[in-house]
Image (cartoon, rainbow, N blue to C red):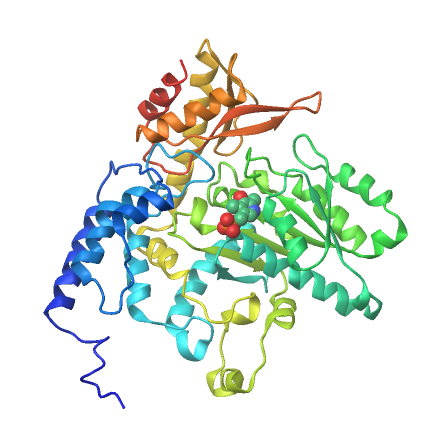
Length: 466
Ligand SMILES: *Cc1c(COP(=O)(O)O)cnc(C)c1O
């Protein structure tokens, strides 16, 4: 039998205190660094060469392991909140949110059940109430924080599919079908595989319109029509920031009696500002909505959110049963159990960093920071239009800007991306855009999230295309 003396994993000794101070110093240094190195990946072989075998029977010691992190491993990661990281959908967590992520870890709270996480879940729920209020969804609409947009979309679409099956026992043996547009995020197709449903894509150049959806439904054969359990609209396509005609699509879904899911994983942040909120007109009619606070609401990874018009349907779809879980459903422990509304059981209180940052700064500061992203996209659009060698592919939407360098081919964009990244200057990646003749053109793309990106940063990046 081991005694407490032999098992030292939790010892508080001088080594632990020194390591803790080192880590706090490093964290403070990192979050106050307004000009961090961008970072650049290395191959696994190169990293192995430098780091060696780190998992050993006796351990390397904190100092050595942390030193490997600082000198080799961290520099091989790209810093997502760098002001010139404008690729994919970047992130720019607030410093308050990052610090509270440390508090969330240090507090060791199980976030699945009220009985264990009441105080933290209460705080998460206040942040959630604000998110729900931005959508305008009526009571009893509510939601939970998830690990990201994929998990939020999956949780919503499982609820849609279960509701469709519950409403007609004949559907139990049917394979479901969900309909979305070609602009939808890749996670929707991935979810089709996970839940063994078909995903039909309506080809759309720009936003998906109500009449296109209605025409598409009208031409379905009766079998396909009967197994259609959800329509997914996108509110801010990841590639170009395009918002589908939510109000019109809501009308079609209501008439056809089909679940209406809105994927606003990226665009949802723009609900928080009065400048762009009207673009989401109709979102209040959704049966479910996805918003990623780790994209445009300045939360650290990972934090998504799913909101339901009728949370009890989600509970029927997701609540897990088990003898060791029964106590959580007891009246004495009555309260809101986040695990009942999404696919995950044990969960981190991943909405807490958002809550603290919102509580500390107030929602106006969020509105201003999001407005700056919108403004940067407009400024970039103007600079591109003025530039003799550059052209907009389409007008900026939300904070996405698609543009071309006249005369460049796909490989020119690729080389340009790698050079800027390798130089430690910027990460801006190419994308593809469908032309009128249905062929695809490679072009450059900015996505602005970080309010600390400057006009000089934009000018500097554009000048690397000369
Ligand atoms: C990013 C994104 C997702 C996926 O979200 P993750 O947090 O990466 O899982 C889904 N839908 C849209 C529209 C997105 O932009």
